[in-house]
Every structure is written in structure tokens, then in C-alpha cells.
Amino acid sequence: MRSTLTAVVAALLLLALGGGAALAHQTKAVGPEGEYLVIVGFEKEPIFTDERNGLDLIIRRAADREPVANLEQTLFVEIIAPDGQARRELPIRARHGQPGSYTADILLSQPGVYTLRIWGYIFDVAFEEEFQTHEVTPLAELRFP
Amino acid sequence: MAASTGALHWTAVLVTALAAVIAWAAPQPVLGHAFLEASDPAVDAVLTAMPAAVRLQFSEPVEVGASIFKVYPLPHEEDPLRLKAAASQLVNEVLTARRDQDRRADAGLAASGAVADDIQILLKEDLPTGPYVVMWRVLSIDTHVTQGFFVFQVQPDGGP
View 1 (tube, rainbow over the protein chains, first blue to last red):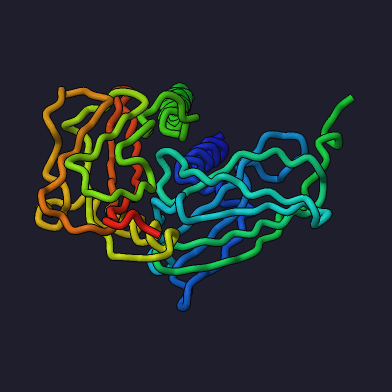
View 2 (cartoon, rainbow over the protein chains, first blue to last red):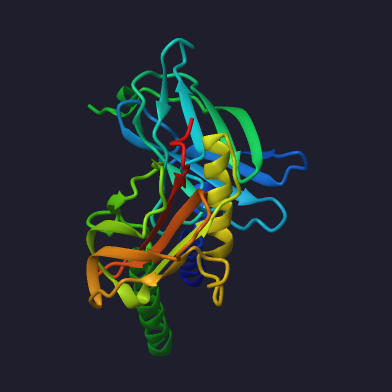
């Protein structure tokens, strides 16, 4: 019983520290000397089709992992569908109460792997990077009966 | 056994309390916070003459005394995106700085109540032309803090 309670408390502390948000996210260092970390994922992972989701974009200083706020006007994200044809620029906004964290709402309608092209400025550092999502699964696979 | 049951009871109470604190502190959907609705000069405006003040209209009243409003000059930059990047860096550096009156372009707020949704930031006299950044961190009456910034420019010839 004690070990169960310890596990529950540990899980709650992990949740409180935001550890769960970074699962399955991808990170790339940008800048001439890798000054900044661009961390990309989705709010709900694993990702299913036809479910409201959101980009989870986090910018941190590489040296001390401090979040970098106020970048919403100089960051740009384009999402490209698995067929490589359909693409859309996502309107980025800062997450309230989470400095250095940015999001954009989206509902992915096709299964497969999406590409995220992210570019812009982090202060005086210009960058452009591409990320691939994990496989997006059809929501129908969850339906029962 | 009774002692063990009592310890478990209090552990369960502590876990429940911790969960409640986490649920309270977790990010909530943003509804009704104080966001910039309008401004004069407008966002990204290019003016031919320096205004006497900057007016900010928020979506709901803010606690003026617990909020920060500043205007800073920016270095000249042709590329609008690089100008915004320079502005974002400056905002990170100076928004919460103290004793920075000499570096600022504003002269404080025009008289307003303790709570207001319409803020007027007075500008110093004889400011040079060029780009400026208006920045704020406001405590709204729903107790949430929001912040933001925008750039405007003064160019006597009206710009490119």
C-alpha cells in the first residue's frame, strides 16, 4: 500500500513539474552555436485524427534551459499533410501563464506523418527547421463497439 | 494496525490536497483576461509625427498600480521582422527593470483610476524619430497577468 501511495505522489509531482508535457516531443538546437532549443510536439500525444489538438512549441535557452518568452510575433509554423500537398500556416500564440511556450489549434483529419516547418527569429538568431510528427492514428481505431 | 490505518488516512488526505493544488495551478483555458483590443498609435503604425501619448484599450479593466507600461526606443532596422525580433529581445530585458527612466521614451501614465481598461502612456518631449516599442504586463481584475508589446515608427517622410 505504501509503495502504491508513493507512486501516486511521485506521479502527481511529475505532473506538477510539467514532465508529462514533454513526452514524445522533439528537440533541435538552433543558432550559430546552438544557443536556443526548439522543442516541438502536440498537446495530446499520441495523436489521433478528428480530435481537437494543438501545437506544443517550446523555446528555451540552451545554456540554462530558461524559457524564452515574447517570440509569438517572430515565430512561424507551417504544417504539411502526409500527402505533401496540403499545407497551412498556423497562427502562433503564446500560452497564457507559460513563458516560452507557444501553441496553435488544429484538428488533423488524415492519418500518417505530418511535417512541421518552423522558422523565424529568436531575438537576433534566424532559423528554419523541419520536424516530422509521429504517426497520426485514425480515431476509428478507438471506436467500440 | 489502527496506527497504520491512521497514517494511510492522512497520506490519502495529503495526496488529495496535493492533487487539488495541482488542478488549481494547472493552465486553464484563457477566457476574459485583459488583452489589448486597440491602441493609438495602432500596432505597426508608421507615423509622420511623434504622438504626445500612447493609448492602450484593454478587453477588461486592469489594476493600474500593479501593472507595468513602458515605451522604449529601438535601433533603426529596415526589415520589419528583424525589428520585431529586436523588440522582443528588449522586452525580455527591460519590462521588469527598475530605475530605467532615463532609457525610456515614456514619462509615465496620465492620471487614471486605480482600475481602468483605457490606459494613456505619456511620451517625453523632443523624442527623435525612429522605431519604438510599447510593452506592458497587466494584472486584470480577474487576477490574471497578461503581457504583450507592439512596435510603431515615426518617419517624417511617412516611410517607404
